[in-house]
Image (cartoon, rainbow, N blue to C red; front, side, top):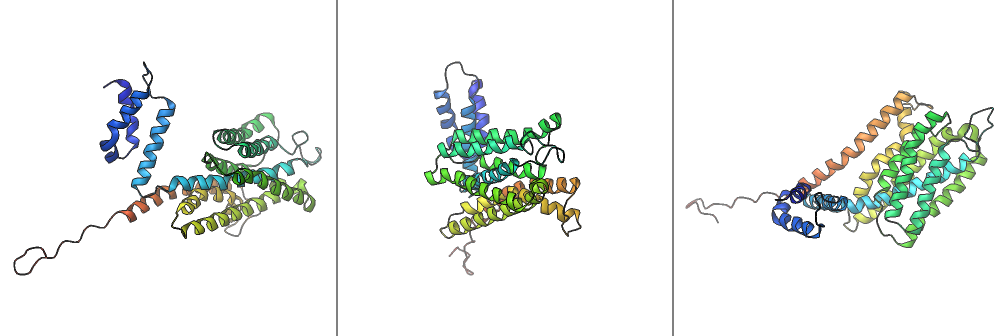
Length: 331
């Protein structure tokens, strides 16, 4: 056995054991035939393809083959929410307070304007053509969402608080699962969400003093509101699909639990910091504890649901045949 074949067999462990015994040699043989001469390692594309195929087969064996379509549905909803929130924050970023009151980042409130502009660019890319380029745009926006924290620390300029950046990060990670192809109305939906949310941001500017409300009162109201809307939409879609024996909505709801929890981070931390009465300005320790709980609890529910689905799908053992009380033979 060559080194390349041995490495393909190692990647094949992603598949269930029964599937490997039945089709393992065929799969490895196909990849070896397609490999170029002199290749010693599987290409990244081949490795990713084998891992994806193994995941699909394991989910199919567990009775959770509809999990991947559910992840794609959750990605569409998460992307809509992330771009809408970026439109709200972008609008408010353009109305900074006087520098003698609160230091800003030039003509903007903070360095967050670059983050939100990247998310709006991702919405434009998605409308032009979803798929690989949209995922790259989302990945770039995620990179800026993370990078704004050390950049602000090094430059001394203000940035959005973590209670605003963390929900955007959670939504963006889910949005990486966007499907390759979507109908034209769904491709344009993020741009429509951006327009509606931008108008809502303008309304907030007129209704409230942005000097004291941006990343303060505004964030504590907008983020939970977005969580409620996302949760209600996911429940409605899931209920409608369940009526047709389609469980994508249930899986999508499970995937979205972590972003929804992060959107509720401020009220959750306030409840902890205020002895369950809801503190108006929760402390750092309460915010960190809430983020850790949400970040661990959400992903842990998914494997538990897959395990439960597998056990419910497992056929019951056959009943032993009854015996004749006289001769002892099976009836």
